[in-house]
Length: 64
Image 1: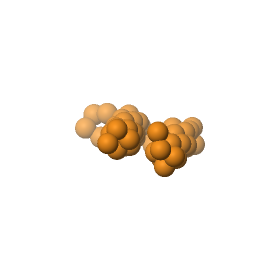
Image 2: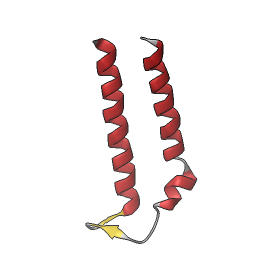
Image 3: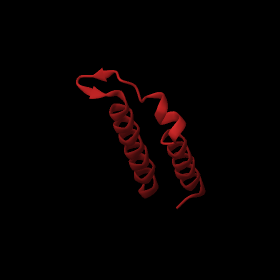
Image 4: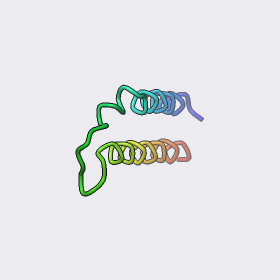
């Protein structure tokens, strides 16, 4: 694996650690709902989906 791909994965993991940390999660913990679901569920799902897509793109470029 190239050094720049490793660096991208390290940056991704650090950013996920920050985004899933308690103070950031508490920003989205409210009584409001969007389409019947709490806002925090949408935040967690969107962050998780974006992390999967970005890691897929990084690994796809690695195999090229």
